[in-house]
Picture 1 (cartoon, rainbow, N blue to C red):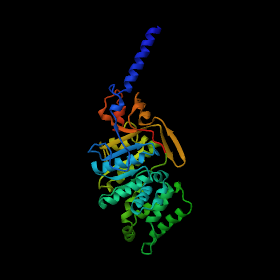
Picture 2 (cartoon, rainbow, N blue to C red):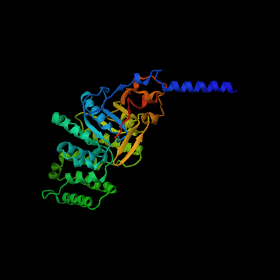
Picture 3 (cartoon, rainbow, N blue to C red):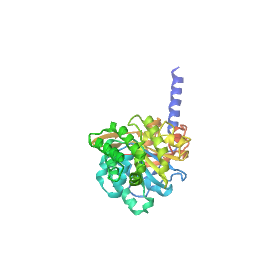
Length: 359
């Protein structure tokens, strides 16, 4: 009995190892190296038909912001991308766009994540200054808001004026008073109901004054994304994208989210965008995700060690020779690989292998 058992175990191990290989080809022969930097030198080509490119990351790894810049600029030229969708709400996006216009870096401090990527925003600002004003990259937020950027944006847009109707001024003053009196994140839904009143106003002077910011106020007022579990949050974010994308028609979209939002085989934002029949991007979504080995993720004062964290780990897929990759950052296109486990090809279009990135 022992001998047959040993044979069965040996076969099991052999098949398991085969499943970890790609056609018995070393992974080093399949990967294309990437050198991150604030430049346009990226050896990657997204499907020309893609209208929404979703890039997944574990936030806070130092190379993320440089790769994001390269992917964004490549998609700008290759896929007519004109919008960067950030994992934040419309108020934070407004603050970032203000930074891109004015250079006031204090606006980025509303988000620890944004301010840690200051080099990226500086590079994007410099890029926008070189292109035609009509073709600048604009930042959009469809996710949940928090009170600090919300307070800044609403007060920046809404100001009482003698020429407004009395009820318009009363509503604006009521909003500002609440914002100045220890408003919290929980105050936002109540404040949004008052903003909706203003958006439905028949005050022609007021409506003319806010015309350039009406889209932002609409996105803020109708935003019901909760700061909660990923699935519920993604469903509401998706509604915001469907509702708001018609207002952004000068080009296509590039988005940077956490890895949990970009797996096409799971209930997440990318799946909704790519597979929902009412999606304006139905069948036109490209997903990119990452796997990190021996890296550091830092947000604020907290630093985490990442070892085999990312898309491969989440799918339970292992490559036996992953540790032999020739460069610290490289990628492969999943549709070009023939492997037994099809989950990888169905989940994402590109996988970025990232190693040894530390602060």
